[in-house]
Length: 235
Image (cartoon, rainbow, N blue to C red):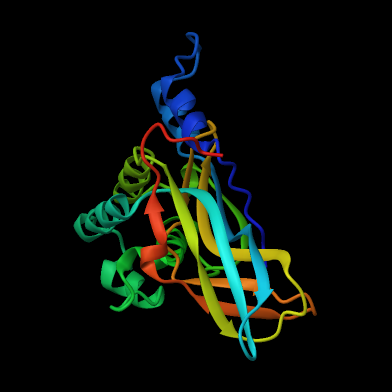
């Protein structure tokens, strides 16, 4: 698994980037625009923590309580509408949704990380197809007008803080109560000017370390994800 670091201060950092007014420079408007549309796409997992404890019978109970920066479900729906309206060669919402496993159920936002990875691979990064790790992009990858317009629009998306809290029980044995790593799928765009747009919320699955070198996959109910109210502490 490739770990993608998502600092919780992405929201405030993005606000600083958007508010920044650089001193006059000799760069042309085209050069500035090209710089803003360069960066790195990261695809992998975001590591959080879960508390494991022996459950009744041959079960294990996992308790989750964490927060993660991400675009919200409404913004993801807007992104899909933008894709439907764009004329990008070999890119369609239906094809991306199918590749991301996004045929109902689950709800659309549950696979936003996979959808974003499919979109960026098809429209921006090119072959090979989706893979874990970082991949850089720049003006040479955005020569198509529709692709450039879509990436410019993605830069306008607001990032929020999502809260995930709840308890799940699954088959398995946990010899003692302990903390363990929990891994949530994520795709994140880090633009060269410091703006970061993560697709990391609403996942319908999580992978846990079992402590014996193995992993345990659990389905996540959509109702365990909530959007943190504006102004609420993000820590």
